[in-house]
Amino acid sequence: MASSETSDHYDAAAHGGGMPQLDFDTWATQIFWTALALFLLYKVLTKNILPKIAGALEDRHNAIADDLDQASELKRKAEDAEGAYNQALADAKANANEIVEATKAEIAEKAAAENAKAEAEIAARTAEGEQRINEIRAAAADSARNVASDAASAIVAKLAPGSADSGTIASAVDRALAQTGMAR
Amino acid sequence: MTLAKAESAEGGFNIDPMYQFEIKNWVPIDLGFVDLSFTNSAFFAFLAVGLTCLFLWTAMSGSSLVPSRMQSMAEGIYEFVRNMVRDACGEGGLKYFPYIFTVFLFILACNLVGMIPYSFTVTSHFAVTVFLALSVFITVTVIGFMKHGTHFFALFWPMDAPAAMRPVLAIIEVISYFVRPVSHSIRLGANMMAGHAVLKVFGGFVAALGVFGIIPIAAIVGVTALELLVAVIQAYVFTILTCVYLNDALNMH
Image 1: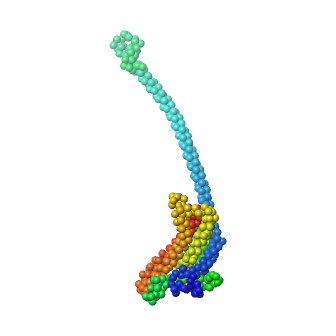
Image 2: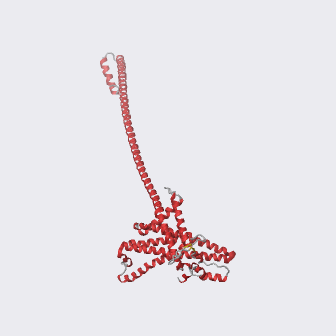
């Protein structure tokens, strides 16, 4: 303030030394223009730039929120589709099992029927075979007895004729055969 | 200044590290009772404002959903300051976000424009920083009283301290409250002034050392990088302190 009478006081610091910052004569102009510049910046920012930036950020925020909504919607759909697929898969498996079981049962039934038929045939054949064996055995036993009784009759007629009739001889042969186990 | 005087006395070179802070009267406007001349300070303040507006306007002119690089920067600065205000003052502080954003951009732009050689650093003058700090101080105090009435005085009355200590602490609180604009303004102004003065002093060494001037040039490169950092950090510090003071007024302690 002391040097305010000199007209070129702005250059005082250069000549006399000291900090230009402490030359209080320049404070009024500095404050005035700073305030004006600051006010100008404030006006431009609030009228033009801040709304623009806020709008851009808002738009992006909304776009991201929309995209997230859409993504969750798609995710839900995908999960539904997966559920449907799993359901279809389970159904198909159940169906396949059913078919397998039915086929198994059918085959088992058929096999049992075939078995039964085969067994019946086998049984019939066996019975037939046994019958024939019995017939042959009976025929063989008869012829053996006839041969035996003829042979015995011939032997008796030769050794002691008239000592026994054919009936006695036949029963004796039967007795002998029964002892050897050939008779029935 | 003693350094500069010593140099000019010994060597032939005359480098005054404070010369760069001279206010130069470009267009004299003397209203008689007050001198409002258009100075280099005023020019660089408007240059900073102009560049800021140009940058933001260019960045946001082709605004799109997927931002361009410049748009990302503009939005980044916006969200950075907005989050700072919200974190420090809560949702209620967002009402004052436009002014805080303006102050941040103004200081940042002035600091960065001041890094251009032969330019002038508006924020290296206490006239400017005191104006900025006092406007914050007064605004915040007025907001405090408007919001809380006389209850705002409770800010100085630490209720959680022992009763006997309260008057002493209250005095300290009041003093620290009124020291706020001083520290708020000196911190910014002194940081900007000191860094630029250091650069000039190293510049003087370059001339004095001749071939070995390469050493101070290397130092200047380092200090310039540091000054860029300081330019941004001091803008941030001024802004965050503004938020802290505003928070005191809005929400008390």
